[in-house]
Amino acid sequence: MGNLSFHNLTVGDEITSLTKTPTNVQLFRFSAITWNAHRIHYDKDFAKFEGYPDILVQAHLHGSFLSEMIVDWLEDKGVLKEIEWQNRKYAIVGETLTCKARVKEKYLNDDQQFAILELLEQSAQGNSIAIGKATVQLFY
Amino acid sequence: LNREDAERVLFSIKERIDQAVEIPIGVMDALSMRRFATVVGDSNPIYHDQKAARKAGYPDIIAHPNYLSAVLVWEPGPPEDELRVDGTVLDETVPSKGFRRMGGGQRLQLISPVVPGDQIRMERRIIKGSLKEAKTGILIIVETEKKYLNQENQVRTICYETLLIR
Image (cartoon, rainbow over all chains, first blue to last red; front, side, top):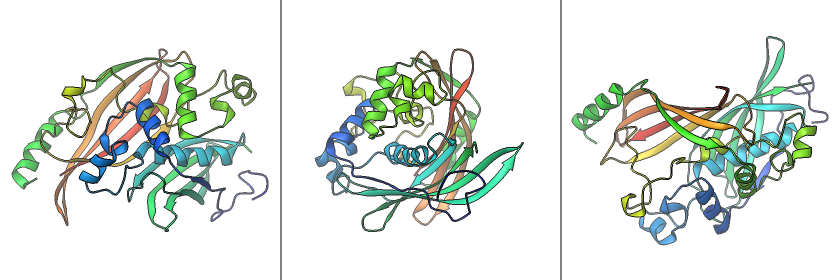
């Protein structure tokens, strides 16, 4: 995409993707630091009792991955202003998840430059795990 | 959830619309902020290294954008024997006892970055409640707002969450 700037950005551009494979340890530590005792995230027997094949990735960890992708892409050339996401399908521990985004729109507001990104987090099988939208402000 | 139950629950939800509940969260510390970014696997130096954060124009390291809203319970929380069977906290901010609750998505407005020393409080309120006839039965859709402010009343993050009750 070259140097990131409002001028250089084109609707339809894809930003640099981010791939993550959450582990047991990561899910346990995320539950711990977010004080989330929901057993489906660390107790495999309980997750199976609830009908899942293994422990589930937390909704807020999906959102955190999406934010990481955007902030990494922006570097010091912009800032993440708003992000929303919805989980469409559960993801289990050990699944490889790829976060992607595409420029949907760009606009000026009070001489400040903004772009709207469409977000997608996909499993290795191509399932949509989470979808969303983000607004970024571009400095250049 | 039958229609009679749904209307009863929705009535009690609507009674609470715009009633703000304030929760003191406390002082943000650099260790917890760094730990959150570490757990996510996000090595961006603005979350870890004070020099790098200052070079990027921040007064200190900043919290990962999802940190405040990802923490589900900022209070100490109940003892283990008072948790639900699934480990979750019985939260009746949105009255729904006996029914199944599911997350329906979230939207974060990142107004200003959290820095160590911020004394954060959260204002939580229900902003909307409605019924929907879905293929699988009646759903109650509740929208809530969590606003996180510091000691100078600067808004750091606003989190809008949708909760589905069935």
